[in-house]
Image (cartoon, rainbow over all chains, first blue to last red):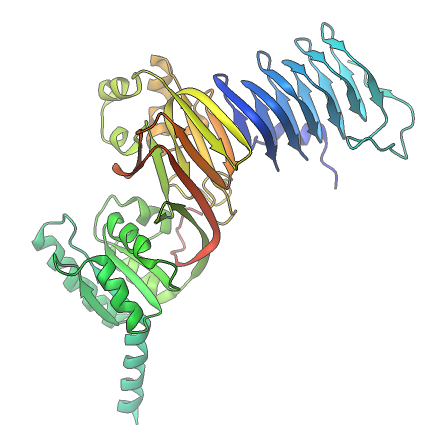
Length: 133
Length: 295
């Protein structure tokens, strides 16, 4: 059974990158990733990524779901839900199935929706789906 | 007929169990008392085997070699956590089932393995509940528990508030650590630990699970006084993930790169210095465990 965003939000993160941590390279995980510090390289997980306000990522992000409150310079390929919080700043392209954007979020790039994170079209949702706030 | 059966049973037992008894810092009176208690319990539970005592002329390494030559299948360390760790280091890839009978009261390993006394240790060995667990390796040393750098939880356990404040108020150091040959972690922190199992583990916890084929790297950032007072108990337990801003990484290989010469300790004993590599060997060890084990 596919995990919902709420399930992912409540699950503890397997990887936590603290505020004073700098990571250089490819950060791969099989569980949720919570980023409070800085990452440059690539971030990849089949589960969820949480980028906390204040965090800075210069990397492509591939994940099942993502909640972004920090800054990302790179492309996001999200198989499920992508939430851009009011503090989010994205400089890069987005591909996701479901997008939610809060007031104040900044985004500069292309957005492709109704596709899974691997770039393939979802059979059920051809049209973009935007959840109301 | 019964006599012959008993004799065969004893010979079978003799081949099966090899007990390494180690005084290792214990007062001689206490050690001899525990040794007598142990011999009685081994006979009572019908798991008597060959017992050998560590002496200045016979190290744990020598005794493990002897056990191997005699065809022992189960090695039992009877002594302190150091005794067990020395036994692990002496295995050198040889295939034994391992067990531990603690001779000290505040043994971390005893808590992890669910044996809290000589009696429960012997009962556990007799029960032969065997778990396959991951084995961590640093250079030629093996361990099942955890290593620490910077923060030393065992020193915090027995200190008061002011001493804890002093220990945890030290200046943060810049650490560089390479993980899984994939990325570098740079952090200004107090230190941390690498856990295979820890005393604070529990069955439903993901951190410190010795059967998941992973190591857990936990790093502590600089704390303020209020945080030290609030979380010093968790830090002493090795539960660094409960402390705000702690970094948690699950991985299979950790290379400690900087600062060079920085100590890696096990139960307060220095086992290596940076640069050093720690790896996990999944499901390598057959360990006899108690039902109250922490994993």
